[in-house]
Length: 289
Image 1 (cartoon, rainbow, N blue to C red):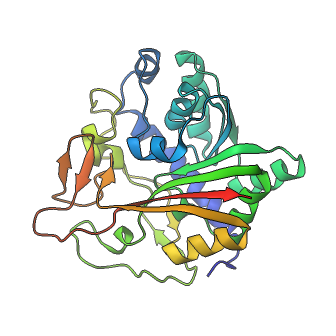
Image 2: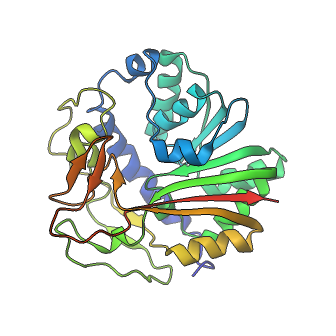
């Protein structure tokens, strides 16, 4: 249901939860500035393929977290802006940009506020980029999609690489626990955002995994929203965008979503042998005509 309210209070609780989780996540990733200075890039082949050649293009990375993928976009030649609700994430991203000597602009803001303010300034971008665990924090798909359409140049593209909503039906032990159709109702986690970097170990570390913060427990709860593929695509179409690509993948990149997953080359995670394949990620390219 795309006409759900914005739930700004839930956004604020998520901000606090992300502030805590981000500290834990970055504690495992070692010297990230060194990684980038030595030519490192955190983007996977899937998003590079969907993005295409972005040299010289203006790109905004929505929900950019601590900026690693944002700087990787800049490394590919784009003029990049990163936006995130977390104070901790944006402060880290700005510092990482300075220390790695890769230029990017970062803004700390609630996404919906930023989209509205940017549209009011008539600031337009060639590409809007969103990836990996971002859409589940969106409380209103319709406002999100229309906000993106409003800041795209004519012919500009939205590029999304995300964890598949089918994957979000399962608990850690692969038991079917959560609904696919949520009617816009949030799923609240009392223990907040986890240290999924520690769970994924080398899969999400930029170089050698470091122990960092151990036995992390988040003090702030978090709220996620389950959106089906049909709801997402419909919101984009109703915002006036043309969907050019809808791709599904039978693996997850970097992040170990469930127990006993098999890690393959390229930091891909597949279900265990006794679990039939299922879509774990998807990619969308939608263009503003």
